[in-house]
Length: 620
Ligand code: FEO
Ligand code: CA
Ligand code: CA
Ligand code: CA
Image 1: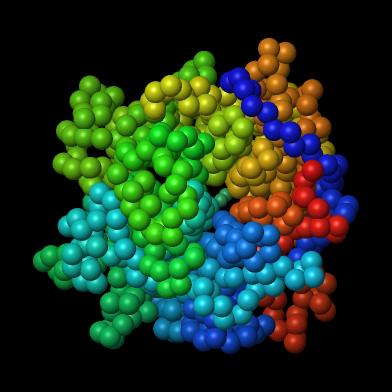
Image 2: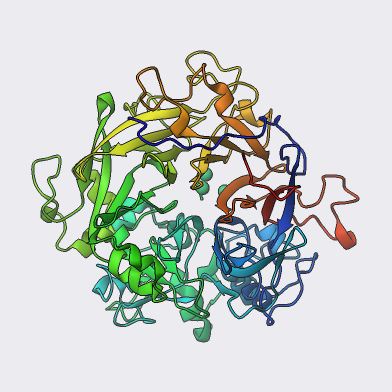
């Protein structure tokens, strides 16, 4: 990699120590504010959050969802003091959501319709208007642009699977729509001002107790017991409730797809586009970008007259890294349009999906997933799939056939605005053992610390060069473990959230899984300016023993949480991150303080707004 362009940003804070408290830690001179926690109402139909868990399903449909994850700020004024925050709500904690936890019985059967509706409504995406007043961010109650997308919201299907027989359901006989978005983990945004929410661990919400399909076998839809939360069980024999809840059981029971829910899961596993600036606008599932456990979605460095590239990782052990290359060529005028969803139609519905093969010696190939693509046995994908829609439905199965490289859980991707280099977090993979073996891009057995890999696209869309930017480790790890020479002030494990700001600072967030680091610190966020790291030949360097001061810990989250999601205002004076599944926070672990109104502990995922006390630019 050659560093043709270099960021001028200079990190203006010292690395902070690790922390294990029920509070967030920031460098001296910085402040952190809780904003838009789970349960806070955003429309008039929702009532105030109750500490005893008694808010009902309607309240939850009109309030911030649970377990905040990816997020993005869309400004409404030039100063960036007024805007829309889109927030993903990945999953739920039933113990915190309900007064006394889930009502499921010993067989996993649910009985409370309101509980299940509340759980479905706690998933999805929130759009909420926020304003900066007197140095504090506030949500704008009942703003016309405030809204929720939940696990039950009607959404349109676009791209190769739109109107296909595989999307045909009793709800959408023409296969044009699906209900709900689930397990919204990482996010993206587009150059034309829309939000992208990514459906990650959706297979766990469906079950097929009968004859399964190839794509269901490949992705791992359950075949016995109940789904993750048992939503499919609550309708019982109440026919009025079957369409609302039994749809999560995709076991074929009728003679055709219009008579049962066999295709219901086929409406999930996509990148979903939302226009935050248009009230009540319908979300669209962009199927051309593949169907798998999408962690995030990040566009590559834009060039006028060139395709737009979107990157998305499949977060599961031994799964793959994908990119979508648009047929349409980028026209910068499209960034200014107000017909935003038409830009999604233009750039995200037609193109080529590729999967990555990382070869030895730092070279790699993007393998197209099209009917005429070569398979490793000398045939073509058309030997196994009849249409592009069939390939998309079982994206991972097609990727197996072309010889993609099994990775250590691809999470978020980020693109350096200066060099165009693409960075990808590989969070961990403790099941990589002697049997599975290693590969050059995933070189560690029992990879519990994870690593960040990087590549530069070649002249053709099918080529790239790659190297490993940093390996996670504890500072005390031996030379075989601490391969990047990390110290107390930047040791980390399980990199997950990843983002560049437009000044060239890369922000690395963690979802810790390794005791060696967890014993020292809660999950955290680190900063580095990769384009400034060059070796003696002027090529981009990796983190090593000589440049430790360049990788600095900026933020530490409260006990039990994951730090995830990153967005920053255009003037770089406020950064928003999510605190997901905290253990106690925003209460302390002091028993007297953690029980407001004498109620049981009910921690709240939330956005945190980070600013400098003097209102200046963050990070520098
Ligand atoms: Fe929901 Fe892969 O993190
Ligand atoms: Ca994640
Ligand atoms: Ca993770
Ligand atoms: Ca998580």
